[in-house]
Amino acid sequence: MSEIFKTFIDNEAALKRLLVGYTSDTEAAEDLAQEVFIRAFAAERKAGGKTGIENPRAYLFQVARRLAFERFRRPGPAGSDQGGVDTLLDETQAMADDWLESRRKLALFTRAVASLPEKCREAFLLRHVDGLRYKQIANRMGISVSAVEKHVALGLTRCAEFLASAGYQQADKTSSGDSGAGSISSLTTDREADADQ
Amino acid sequence: MPTNKQDKSAPLVDFPDRSRLRSEAAAWVILLGRDSVSVDDRQNLAQWLAQSSAHRAAFEELQGLDSELSLLRDLDDIGIAMADHGHTKPRMNRRRFAAGLAAAGLLAPLAGVYLTRRENAEIAEERSFVTSVGEQLSAGLSDGSSIKVNTASRVRLAFSDDERSVWLDAGEAFFSVAKDPDRPFRVYTSGGVVQAIGTAFAVRVADDMALQVSVEEGVVALSPASDATDVELAGKSGATEQLIAGQKAVFRNELQSIETLAMADLERSLAWRQGVLAYADERLADVIDDVSRYTEIKISMSGRDVAERRVAGYFRVGEVDALFESLQLSFGLQVKRVGDGYLISDSSDAP
Picture: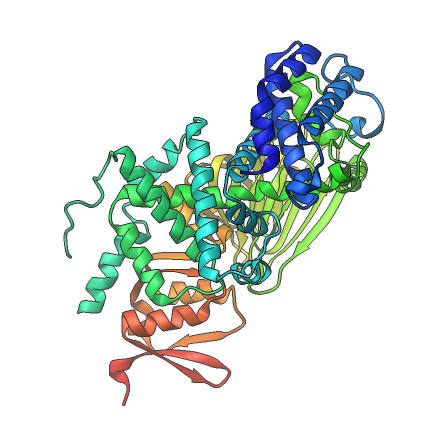
């Protein structure tokens, strides 16, 4: 498990209390807390792992305060943003929701990744953040390609478990699978029948 | 036809099974991520998938998740932004939080990317995407939509205040369109215009200039190219055809054909988005036609019998070798190098 993730979990309740204090809004505080985690984890990785951030606990609170402060400094109702970048943005509510949704997923994935053993996490991040191929990862980490594949598969499974336990359903996919009588799989039979002839 | 009693109807799966299926499916998804996948592996996967609909569902779930993990790429930019301090400018009015994050460039370097795009968007975002044979690319657009461009394609786009216009000059692209009632999203092609109504769909310009549209989500409206300047007008004159999710149509200034596909079949025809070509019981001639879109290699068939053979399979884009190998091993066909291309023939014809 990543150092910053461990620290985050240990201090999650306190961070949320702090953020609720600033925002008076539990939902916003929850999203902010996840944002704190995403950023701290990204920062830890950029800084080269656990040694990168000297005092993880202080760092988390510092990021949380900064996020909360920025929010506090810019109050006002939705859509009243003025100037600069903001005027260029005319996101609809739907888009804002989509964005938030994908950010929540990113937080979930990041948690899943952060919970992985170190080598596995490294391989998984090289694959999905840096987009490296298995062979490149193997060279970089000095392990075999099959070890890389095992690490990456474990990471994928872990993300699936995190998603499922967070209540993301794959229901519609399942039903499409059921109706998929014509999908690749059933052909195998045809194909083998063909080959047998 | 062999019958398989436990197939197709296997409905509910116990938790331990689900967890086992999930790890097995993960292993398959990882295997498909290799630089090359052997014919044996592919056949084993097909057999694994054939076991039950639960197997297929687990595979689809994990494969979908694998592509969703591209979200993690943001971590790199966020990390840089964090290392670069003092730039974080979140503005979080609860519901606007999301837009705010994206907007205020919570992530300064990301903001770099964003700003460039945004500045363009103010007047008109203009971009173009060109892929060569066998190449694919995907991109996020400034309005929150995304695009996947298939092999040998050319797409241009110009977003203004009142319309998001896209020209598909050649090839194929898949669009996942963000809702914006004030700015319709329209894809112009020589065979007609496709207007998105909050949706995800693929458009392909075939060689005969006919337009093929497959709708994955929502609704799209098709209208003739001649009226392309005013889709609303075309709509009023009744020339517009509506397609809903699961439908696939061929259109050339008027509707040529329309079919409603099972979702699994639709997904298979859109598998190219994951860099995969999947065929189910299709004529070899059609498969070769399709594969040829992704490679410069010329492939021909020795005769009608061969062209009419029904085949099925699962290949990564550009893996022509794997296709040949599988045709030889599983279908008993022969593949020979002839001139600057390859000839597929029936080995029983061979001297």
